Image (tube, rainbow over all chains, first blue to last red; front, side):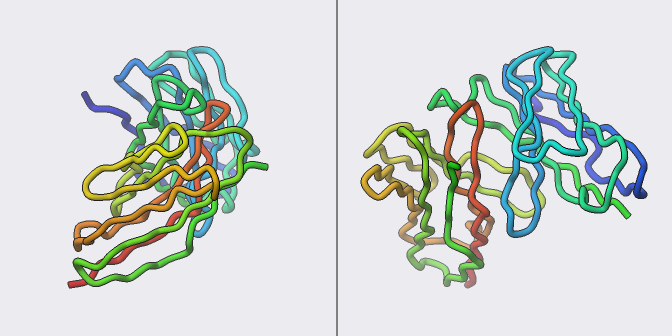
Length: 116
Length: 110
C-alpha cells in the first residue's frame, strides 16, 4: 500500500495563477483532510470531507476550493494564488473521523508551494 | 473555542537526557488526545494516542497520560536519542477533526 500520496511535491506559482493539488489514498478511508503548515502556527485545517461527494470548511477555507468526486481522491484548488498562500500543504485521511475518539489520521508527505 | 497549547521550542537535549514536552487543551467533554511526530522533510505520523481519562499511550519509549483533572497530555521519554530529533505535535480530536498545537522542535545532540 502506498498510503497517502500527494502530487506535486513542489510548485512555484506567480500571483494570480491557479493550480490543483491532488491527494490520493488507497486505504479505503471515508474521511479526508487538507491542512496548511506555517512556521509557528502548527497545522490548520483548510477543508475536509466525510465521504465521496461531500466537503466542508475548516478553519482557514478562504481562497481554496475542494472536490471529492471519488472516494480515494481529494483535490485542493487555488483559483487565484496569493503570496499569503505560500505554505506546505498536507493531506490526511482516516477511516472514521477523529471525533469518534479512536481513529488515526494518516498524512501524506506534503506539497511545498511558493507564490511569488 | 477549543485549543491545544504546547511548550515552545526548540528544545535542545543531550543524548540520554530525559524529555518532557508539555501539552494542555481546552474542550468540552473528553476528547481523544494524540501526539504526532514530523521528521525533517516528511509528513506527520502518529506517535501515540489516548482515548479516555487516565489512559496512557506509549510507543518507541515515549509515553503520555491523559489527565482530565489538569487537562494535560504531556509527552515524556526517559532517554532520548539523536534519532528522536523532530517536531512533535500535540492534538485533540472532536467533530470529525483534529486541532493541533503549534509544534515543539526537539534537537538531540551527542
